[in-house]
Image (cartoon, rainbow, N blue to C red; front, top):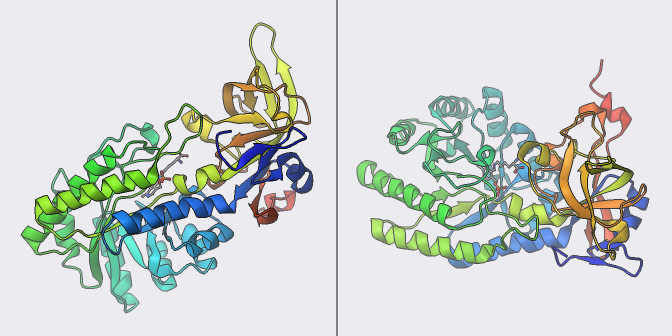
Length: 431
Ligand code: LLP
């Protein structure tokens, strides 16, 4: 099995954290997302321990809630000592509803409206990651109106191409995110920010992309950012407290993806940061990291019921399931790979080559093409692994399909994390 929390029981059924996947669907219905709490904790601890061991004092990992955002998940993550990054007032609302300490919450986004900024300041956000000059002006004004001095980091683009999917690469100079270092505009932004009375600049942020397997792009980004930190000190006397290097560590979705040792990558990054600081003659700032995918992706499995198996003579076979792009749009959007298996026949050899199709009225509604599944039949439970990141958070109600339930399993017990959407939910906003 791809992960150690998955196994097969005496009935030949897939088990997740020791619980029978077929029984879980009988109990909670399908599609069903099953989140393993202990695995979330394990992933958090990998970051917490490595950050403490290898990065400068004051460094902290922040969970990027855009990957999967709901109250119970934040409770788990907060209890492990992580901070959080939010990218919209909606995510801020959720993290606040989970009583997450806002001191450790960072508000991102390339277009925060005045309403967003007011809401965040009134709610008591720890820090903004300010994207651009227009936004800084608004934060300064709104902070002043509320009698506050607002802490911010400036989002800069280091000009790094991390060799990942173009749609999830963000650190290039030509990007909608941040302000470019290469063009000199980042220095101008810092100078400007330092003139604003109601803003306290604490440091800088960059994010180069997502699903990155090597440590080199992060080290390259750290180099560029630390050179900027050194220049800011030398030319403007600015002392950087925090350098946020964003998220992006990759996750193994299929056997052919490389195994990634996150602790070792953080160790390498730490060594790199220390060496660069020595070279530039600066004190190392505290390093913030923003993992999303690598905290939650491998903690969740989606279970579907198979409705039909259709072989088109001379072409291929389609296995249709009772979910699809509405709960997992990542294949349709990025061609993302997933491991798929028949949870009802997990002990049988997977030799039926097929395309897994969702139930939407749309040909592109596929979960995977050309995968091998053990003799699928109507009624079997199909498991798609590694669905914790950017599945539920990107889910939709297209075709008025209800979002699935998310259950949390821990030490043999289950509880509902997000209840299944109902038809009534679908007309809640209709007048
Ligand atoms: N910080 C910032 C500023 C980000 O933009 C992102 C992801 C993260 C942290 C978390 O990165 P992670 O550790 O999860 O790779 N929807 C796409 C992923 C988009 C990622 C956007 N930013 C997908 O499904 O692959």
